[in-house]
Length: 364
Ligand code: AN7
Image (cartoon, rainbow, N blue to C red; front, side, top):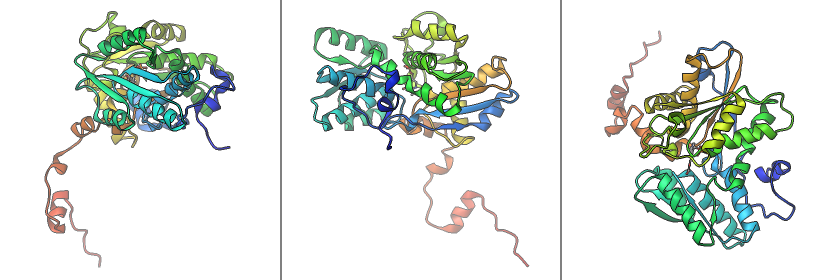
């Protein structure tokens, strides 16, 4: 049977009925891959580390899992407009699912409200080409979310931020995939925390999965400049290179704390330098890719391991939430750009010199 997306695959765990119109772009079924370099960098005996590459969803982030549910349920109730605030990925995903709904013959407009100047180029361009109406505001994600909530109170528009319970429900499917593939739950799940919907969803998923012998400890990581849960108060002016998680007042704050406490886990913060060091390591030592915010999961794992908070012999899954191509600007800044800056003449001698090549000794 060809794969037809997360709703059909995991319908028994989801609030869908026979007559729910399934709006899918074949989200899910993302790779779970070993990360041996990160495992040894942790310095914990017998550690197994995997990446769940959520950046390989159709729009390049985990948001597609929640959006297939939110948009299917919106269509089911006859909604013709959806709206979200976004640091970028939610807007890309909402825009794509609205396009898919239109292609299936439903009326569906998508509106996205984003913080001007703080959405990575890849994400902004996605929302635009998928045909959303994009509104940039002066103000951050938290301000955008407040506007969206007000608009949904006043006008007939369906909110598809993670305040929409179907978003969280849909995002549980990644936990199911991990358990299916490992044959059990991992011991730890390391995940970036922004608006805190995803950590909430994974915990719900691990909690209702049938067939695992245990549940993981949930280890969530905020950016140090946007760490309201860790610091215990909303952050007025959140700042981080991981713009996806530049959020000062998470909607699912309480649920994230519950996931942490019920699982015996933790929510900690990592600095931008730690995030970027992990980001380089993921690319340069594992050959995988993610956007900067996603690397918070790996930076947090390394920090936790060094603090003795990861047991020897355990299995860890780090969620790489977004695709590396979303934010090419940061990728360029984090690279050795020296060789790419100069343009050389098409001359093999000159290029050999630039590359530092030395002739092989002549064979006798
Ligand atoms: C790559 O797109 O909030 O803790 O508006 O894009 O569930 O918010 C994105 C969040 C992690 C944090 N990694 O997840 C949005 C948005 C990436 C993200 C998060 C986001 P939550």
